[in-house]
Figure 1 (cartoon, rainbow, N blue to C red):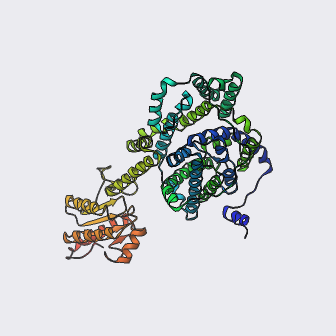
Figure 2 (cartoon, helix red, strand yellow):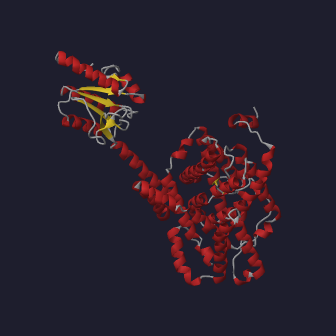
Figure 3 (cartoon, rainbow, N blue to C red):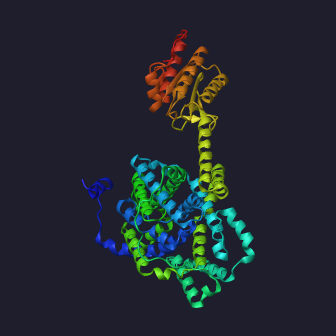
Length: 571
């Protein structure tokens, strides 16, 4: 089987309809109009020249077009991913441009290979690993960092610092040396890009802004007044090469590459799934992991940096009516043409205009509406979101995310350690059992305690379960039997098993019979294998709460006719 046959067998057949061609060509030109200026601008985040950003749009887009599963997703340079790459490699490069490119290639290939392996072992569930509040908080932090980081470009002073706090401090130090022509050009470009969409929402404002700023540079001869330009952009395509590295270097970059892999994939999947749902098809997360990984390997070998799903360009593609990944092919070919035929024109782009594009991109990452919604629904999730933002601004991108994820996991452990539980009864007109805490008027059977524990029974909450249940038994009037509704206790470990045995023995010593209902899954399997509590059938285990209640009522009737002999179980 040749590689093409393997790809078709793994990823499914592809059928292109001729009437899609016009829409895909139009969408490709529209996306290219947005992709070119943003790619050049995002390369500036890391400190790369313009052509490196454009290199990240050619081979990666062609690779994703071949193997990707989303019909709308556009891949390419992404502001958040570029910021993470910059945080990982800029300190190691120590100002050496060649070293910066070398490290960027290594990280891109590492992210690609990690993604491919993750897809092959079916680790696509990682797409759900970062909760929405964490993603929003992370993007808010990146957005604020981008805004602060572009102040030097907009005000016309040189600054090698990065990050939110450093960017603000640099602005305060250099405020007196503001270059007024640069500020006027950058502010005008930013204002133009803000106002134009209100009148023409489909206009590629980043491209229009850069073109008009470049025209202003030529017409007004602004270079003579000290306005910095992008400079010469070499013609031609990148030379493909596999980055050479060493084991210590790989080990040193592994943590950052792993973090970038997770965040880049989660961000891309969020965009891909959103547009797939809008168009009525499903996305295979494992396939997307592989596709994004191969695209990043393509970015690495073409002397560029890590790419991800680009939500703004995907939105443009969908708005114009792109039907398939042929749009990505068109975008890649347009960028090739720009590098070959229009590279001289790129040299007239002013740095201040690129700073304006990045400031607009940074503002677009900040989501105040989502933060307001979090506050209304969950104060903890709001705090988690804000903590992520503060972490990204204060200690860096990856440490900030790790702190937030750690807090989320601690909360999950706390909720599992002290889960909801309830004593159950029933109310006329309401199906099934109800919680006595919500329905104090609910009826119960004298002597029968029906208890539900809303979590798996594991080593860290087993003692809490035992204390809660025995306390409820102590507080009950003349308890004769406990029926544990185990429908939410879907998992059980050895400590939980030993705790159930202890509860059974403690209750038996008090003359109280212990039984289960709705026991299922791994908990049922472990109890079955161990045989610790007895045979898993009535009177120990019932298929439903109602079956357990009926058995108790039969026992009550039997006891009323003939007193229960010592040690006789409820049946």
